[in-house]
Structure formats: C-alpha cells, structure tokens
Image 1 (spheres, rainbow, N blue to C red):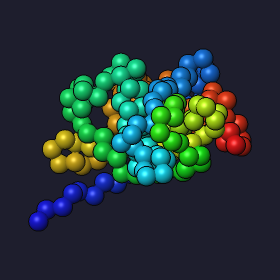
Image 2: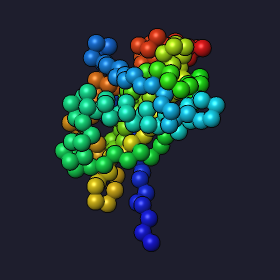
Image 3: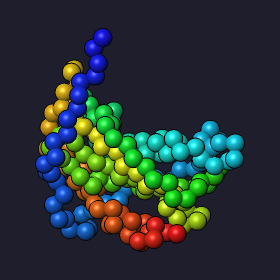
Length: 177
C-alpha cells in the first residue's frame, strides 16, 4: 500500500522584511459560537476552533484577491497543513460573538505560517491563539515545491508579528486577562 509522501520543510525565510506599518493589514472576521460547536456544558468544543481558523484563512485569501477557489489552479499546487497548534485561554459559550484574526508570520521557501487569535468580544479577552504551517506541494505527487513568489507578494500585506497583531486587537502582554 502506498502511503503519503514525506513533506520536508525548508527553513530559509523569503519574507518578513521590515515593512511600513501602513502597509500591514490585520484581517478579521466575526463569528458566533453555534449550537453544533458546544458540548453538554454549553462550552465550545476545542476542535470547533479549527473551523473558525479555516473561515478566517479562506476569507483572508479572498480579501487579498486570490480566493481559494482560484489559488490551486492558478499556481498548480496544493497547500496541505503539516502542523496545527492551539492554546486555549478563555472559554467561549453558545452564541458568544468572537473576532477571529488571521495573519501570516512567516514565508519560507516552500512553507508559510498563518496565525490566528480569537477574541471573545463580550469579555474583551483572548479565547484562543493558534497557528498552522502549510506546505506548498505539487498536485500530482504532493512533493514539496517552492511557494510562488507572486503569491507571497500578494499575501505580504497580511504578514506581521504576533505582537503587532495583538496590539491591533488591543491585547497587550497579559492576553487580555
């Protein structure tokens, strides 16, 4: 039985040059905690945050002018996730309104890192922080390939540090606690 090819990350950084702060843009969407996302106690199931991450990521690409429905055909590639990490800071409950921020913190030769901060609006606190690493691959064999330079340039305005993003969300060092 043939398994999935091994994806190797190359660590050289292509982008995170110092930018003019006016060129940076924190992308956010607002979303409510739905009935299907809560457990018996009425608290959001931790895996439901992955859906929030996906929504914010897809809308960020759309906002940048390259909706996911076009990305893969335009550059003949895939962007599978090879790493997902989340930290949970404050519980969200049924019908709570959340603001999900999405921003890139790193562009490598063949990978990128997208970070997410989920703000609990009523509490003014960070509910969840997380990030994903996506690797650019060929579509036929899933072999690692370089990220298209044009795509990096399109996404560069959404690249910032965690500290810059949290300052825009009015979350300082205490994570809004």
